[in-house]
Structures are given as C-alpha cells and as structure tokens.
Length: 459
Image (cartoon, rainbow, N blue to C red; front, top):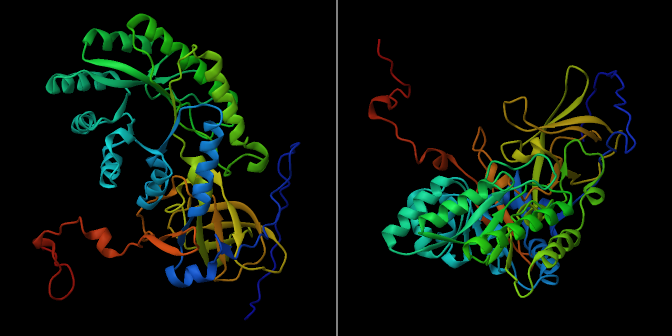
C-alpha cells in the first residue's frame, strides 16, 4: 500500500455541551463483512456499489414478531402494509404472503397494488388526495376507504348515486394524545367537534354509512401510552356514533408510527435504550381496547405499520471514492451514495460499519455523498480511522422510506438485491441507465444536434 505524506493539522478541541447522558460519539471501528450471510465483497463484485441489500429472513421474522405480539392479546388483528414506506414489488409481495393488506395513499400506489394482483377486499385507501376515478374504482373493487375531508364525502355521494348503492366507508380522525407535534393535517378533528359534524353531514346525505374509524398519530412514537389514549378516544367516539345513528364500528384502524432501531438526530442514547419493545405497544393498545369495548363487541384492529417492519431489513453498501481535509482541518470522505439514496439522513443517524479492520488513530470526520450540494452529508460527526480509498461502508437500518423518497438527481439509482431465506441473492430492481432518464423526454426536431455534433444557433 502506498503511503502519502500529509501536512500536520492542529484542530480546536470542541468538547460540546455538558449533558448527563454521554459525551461525543465513540470511535467507529465496527466491522461487517457479510449481510444476511453473504459476503460484502461478493455482493459488490456482482452488483456494484452503491448497492441496496434486503434480508428476506429478517423481514419475515420482524413481521411475524409484530403480528404475534398483537394476535396473542386480541383475537381479530389485521396488518396493512404501508406502501409509502417501501413499495418495491418484491418487498410488498413478501409482506402480502405473510398476510398483510395493502395500505395505500395515492393513485400510483393503488395502481401498483392492483398490478401486483391484490384484490379490493385486501386494500385500505387512505391519504388526502384520492382522484375521483380512483375513488370510483375503489368503490367498485370493495376497497376499505377512509375519508379525509368534506370534498371526498361529496365525491363518494356522487359515486353512490351513479352506482345506485349505499357505500360503507371509514372516517379518518385527528386527535390529541398528549404528544408533539400533533398530526392535525389529516382527517377530521375529534376534540373540536369537526368529526361529529362530518358524521352528521354523512347521515343527512343518506348515501354513505360509517363502518370504521381511522387515525394515525404520527411517526417514530416512543410513548406506548399515546396509543392507549388514541384507542380510548376512538372507541368512545365509535359508540357515540352508534348511539346517535345506529352504525356499529366494524374496525378500529390505529395507523402506524412504531419506531424502528434507527436513531433520530439529537438523541444521546442508542435505539436499544430509547425504543420500547413491540410488546409494550401491544400491551398498551390491546389493554385499552379491552378496557373500553362493550361486552361482545370486538371490532377488527387494523395496524398500518411500515417503518418498524422494514427498516432493519435494509442495508446500503457504499464505497469511499475520495478523501480530503476541509479548511478547518476536519477529515472528509466522499462516498458514492448520498442524500439522493438516503433521504432520511436529514433526520436519522445510521449505523455504519467498515468492511475491514482499519488501523490508525480515529478522528472526527464527515462523510459526504457524490452530489454537488453542500447538504449532501451522510454523517457530520463520526469518529473514524484513516480510511483508504476503496473502503466500503455498510449503512444499516435504511429499509424505510429511502427507496420511495430517493431522487434521480445527478447520479443513476443503483441495483437493489434481496438475500433470500435460503441465502441466494436475487436482483429485485435493476440499476438505472440513460434510457430510464430519457425515455419520457421528447426532443423537437428543430433542437436536434446537427451533423457536426453541436447544437446550431440562430444568429
């Protein structure tokens, strides 16, 4: 290995603010040579870098663990797989095999689920934008539709008139469970009376009937008791509806929001310390159901968990392609994956491991992606040994939202593979090339390059 002289650097010591939890982040020397039993070197040799890798065994195990936590506490539980969290076809197909419904929030997701062969009675349609044609198709399909706003009531009434039938629907609520920020954008507010006004409006219209309630209190919820307060309010409101209009609730859909083992920026402790086990959430939710339901009434409990199901099953391999010193002396590394592939890095600090032991003193470092944007930083406060070019970093807990929010910006999006339960590696999304970028573009003949190969300009 060739060694290079590097000018000595003097850096100001920043001890940080005092806190009772911890000091600076410890040096990063974790080594990970395999993912789901497959060598990192073999994966990169066959599929290149960067590379997303999913662990099928881990995904199925996580889903079953969550399902069993609730099914052992309440007799009628259904999971709806949140497509917006990760709608790669293979990921969705695995979770549908495990028994999850499709929980959708757009026409695009509805089209994906139908193309995958999911029947209407296994689909939940949420979200604030449901185009009229999609709503009508969903009604004809027997989809569970949760109304988000008054305009959807009018659309559904028009559809009911056209089809000459009464349509059974759910109503989405937003409510106060004592946590901040409150997700008040979606659905009808419970405490202000807005939700009951919507129920009265539906009853007067005579075209729809309410069969269930839906609510999603937020994301990365670390307080299980917030769900017990949610369930209590939803059940009580359901009985108010039944008493006034005779519509008994067939389901209570509590949305998702359970945290994964990823770590929000600004937290001191590891996820193992701050994230409660799923059993605590199951206890809080199911106990609240039993405490508030009337004897003999057991509505279906629907859970639309996404992050907690998929996040830990996804990893990203990225490679160091350059090193440098910033003006203040900070060591910086440039890798071939940035915020274009890891959009959630704006909120989360990922677990990073090296593909090999690297000797040398650790120092505060920054990991930048390949984009020509100053905000393209994967980690701005990690302590690393001197990494040579070609070192691979394995970024863990990236299965949620990164493959749905990734950007086609500056770089091609890479291969995505699945390590099967038997240890085989299957390609589930091919890397992009120029044809993927340009196949929707149209170049007018007058703008076509001339024979010289240059664009001609009118003078």
